Amino acid sequence: MALLMDHQFRQLPADKQVETRPFLESCSYLPYFIDCLGPTMFAPIKAEITGNLTKIKAVYETNPSKYKTLQQILEVEKEQHGSQWPKVGATLALMWLKRGLRFIQVFLQSLADGEREEANPNLLRVNVTKAYEASLMRYHGWLLQKIFRAIMYSAPYKTEFLKSLSKGREVKDEECLEKIRKFLTNFSATVDAIYEVFSKMNAELEDKV
Image (cartoon, rainbow, N blue to C red):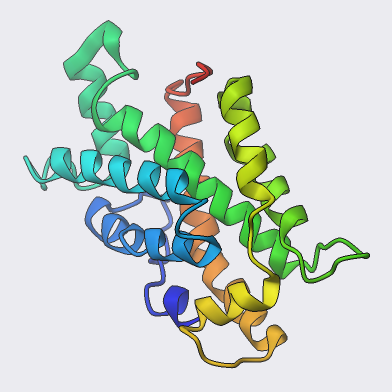
């Protein structure tokens, strides 16, 4: 669990504003988390997260004070791009990034809640499938859905995944799951806050890829 606990997300302030710099720093370690699920088969999700982080960071670094929070990025880009918004810039990248973050959030929460196949309790298929259906599936056409179905069936065993999260150390499952629950506190609050901003600003797109 060191992989997640060493890079926890910040607790949000009362106004739920997500500061861009610490958000990007914490997110930068999530591709390594995806590697724990499978560096080859889950490479598309890792590439998507990495690519969107790069795009958001590039915009942020042009003017850190103007883009101090994620909400400010959306507000500034809405004014800059007019009718093209939200289909452009860091807004579009954050739109897809948050979906990847939701995938991780739902997957970890499902794991922490003990959801599993009764006949195969060491498989992660139930958890990964729930995460995909809650985050990415509705935005994917039939071909991508078919690809991701194959990816989900390649998920590692739960014991192997938890060991990878702990950087190869042998740990008790419940100890690891308890740390996942702690990580989810700030992580889930952050993901939910980003979704809330997109909803309030009517910035969500339903286009499929």
